[in-house]
Image (cartoon, rainbow, N blue to C red; front, side, top):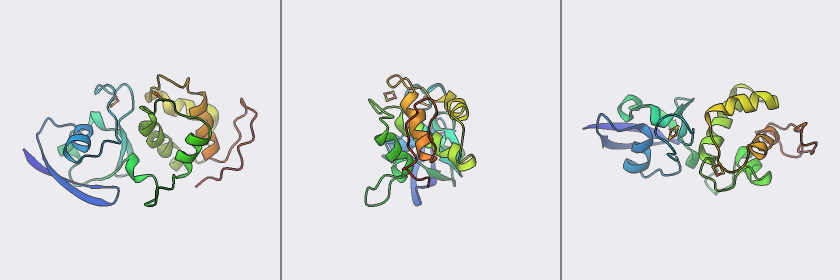
Length: 168
Ligand code: FES
Ligand code: FES
């Protein structure tokens, strides 16, 4: 056991962790941050994606002790303090980019990572970026549409004008 201290969504949080404790497990079980989901624990599904020092990481692939001292962003930190959804979250809601919602935290965190480095991705680039994120409900179309909308773009395949949603 050793103490692990993270800055989670701007707030310093500490707890003891075993050497084998995964970052995903640490966030959920030790810090009570259950917005990060665990679908597989084997690096397949992407439900557990968070940002560690600004880089998107499947948190089931990293030990909590490896993350000691890092700044971690999770889905809980995406909305404003008053609950106002950020642009990506609002776009997922507006374009029905979720059904059961299990994959959504990872989808949002992966999409945020994409838009940070590529603010106007093509549909192909969005689909490529989401290769590590599995959704068992939506068929992906509305997820891609939401991400295109959040980037202020019209998705050609849908032909729907989504330009009213401004990019962050
Ligand atoms: S729980 Fe981490 S990739 Fe599935
Ligand atoms: S919305 Fe159900 S798994 Fe994606």
